[in-house]
Length: 126
Image (tube, rainbow, N blue to C red; front, side, top):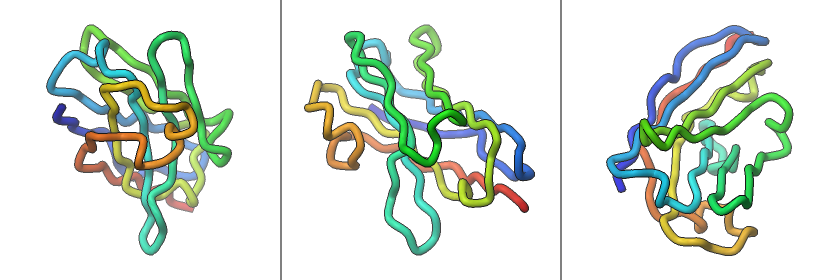
């Protein structure tokens, strides 16, 4: 699976932005789709994920209540809607996918994903 992230940009504190991740094949068969982010000098951090089969959505503590992940199977695209943005949300955002079902705990870690997009920069100005 090839993943192409887009939609990043510069936004002011408190603003909103939606980033997209387009997949090269049907995402209805992909078990987990997720978003991670990485700021300069920091480790890659889990942001959000959606698991098939009614297992639902998962969010990192720092984005709960502000970010929403969604899938559009018809467009083979996953979105991350980001509201109430803060300067600490500044990072390169990566989408990731796992075709197979892995244990739920792996959802929060990079080892839970087999495919990665190239990243899109999100910058929140104060």
